Amino acid sequence: MFPVPRPLIAAHRGAVGLAPENTIAAFDHAVDAGADLVELDVHLTRDGGLVAVHDVTTTRTTGRAHFVHELTVAQLRSLDAGAGSRIPTLDEVLAWARDRVYLNLDARNYPALDHDRTTETAEAVVDAIERAGVVDQVIVQCLDHQLARAVHARWPAITVGITQHGRLHDPVGVARAAGAQLISGDAAFTTGELVAELHAGGIGLMTSAELRLPGLHDEPHILRATTERLLEAGVDIVVTDDVATTCAVRATSAERAPDGATVPVP
Amino acid sequence: MSRTEATLNELDGWRGTNRPLVVAHRGDAHRAPENTLAAFRAAHEAGADAIELDVQLTADGVPVVVHDELLDRTTSGTGPVRALTWSRIRELDAGSWFDPRYAGEWVPALAEVVAWAAETGMRLLVEPKTSPVFDTAAASALAGVLAGSGATVIVYGSDHLLIRELAELAPGVPRGVIVNERTSRTGQLLDEAQAGLLSQSTWCLTPDVVESAHAAGRLVIASARYPGDVALLAGWGVDLIASDRTSLTTVSTQLSARAPMRRSQARWTTCSPL
Image (cartoon, rainbow over the protein chains, first blue to last red):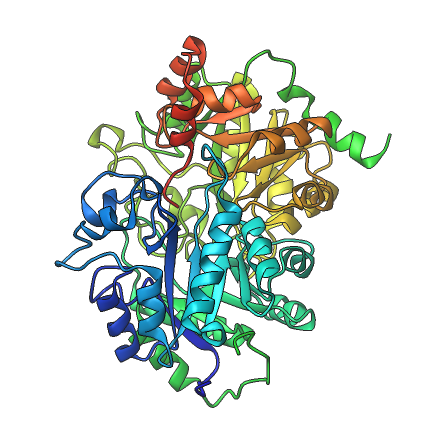
């Protein structure tokens, strides 16, 4: 694909400071700011479509209280996702991203719901990627490791990531059990030893540089310090709400040459 | 006695009731500033069975009860907890942000809360929020406070290696792990950490997870993010139900009422924005 410096920088839900999260406008801004990946969340709709929304409801991002899985694509498209923009479908996002940028698709699934839609979600995500011809550009990220397995089983060529907040005894084993090649982990648990352990097992690491404290904006100096530490540890992908700052940190630490670690992105 | 049996026996103080234990998340945090003695006393008065609290380490390695990595949200201080010594943190106001009436509250040392719990008989669920990057002495600092304290304590968290370390350093203090993902390897994660309590996110908890935990003699804790979660979790046999966005009062009321809830309606409320 296109050559990129390491580590890759992922824009969390697009450039969220510049446009409403999970909209094409936010994704455009992220690319302009220098992001290598766009991270977005996808949900299965009532009629089996896939849309980019983070929460299980549309309350926070559209002001209308609905469960995403209870609405059709058409109904979701009629909502205002902020600043007059629409909730994009996954097909739309994949067409937009083609030959432009890598994607980290955080596929949402709620097994505690009335009927488990794990298989249906996996099939819909995989089929959309296949249709769009972007398998080389996409990571499917899952907090639900059983969804990760289902995606991997349906099309082993897809790069699969699992989200794993804890510090575990055998993270490589957990990733392999889920058919994953990438772990999205917590900055608090990200060390050089963890990166070495994962890389030895053929697993990459993605970490967010943000503190994510409710109601508290991250100080740029804290973001910089955390990013520096993550680069030092050798993570493969840094996720950020502030692409420009993160890119600047990467540029200044470019002298610290990459260790040849393999990023499980094609 | 095998290691597994020992791990499970340690939890005896948390078993034997015919209903789920009600856990006050950070104390009665809807009525008093979270993670202060005022919130813990309020939870005690409200009849909570246990209190969940969060622990960070100060610059001089003292375990203190505060949730965020930064002091900004819940105290008059700013910056990371680990940047200040205990004597500096002790001077901060941890109550005014919630209500001026609580201006006298401070960030309690874990030792103070454990001593209070030993006195009152209140059970504690202690969640270290420490990081192996910065807090390399976390296990011994926690063990120093928790081992032989006389209080009924479970220590549990996301750092499964830290929890396992505490099996050696604080024997007799039962342990739990937080698993906020749905994985097929939950039992293995508990074994590796020598933990008897599973804390799982409500969004991914399903009855089969509770069943297999119970089959292995383990306990399960989950949070009620919405009022409807209470009846649902109780119906699944969850052993400890923690308040969260749902207040302690609501959890207790729902639990004693055991209001019948249509399954589909309850299930709706279990999924929450992550």
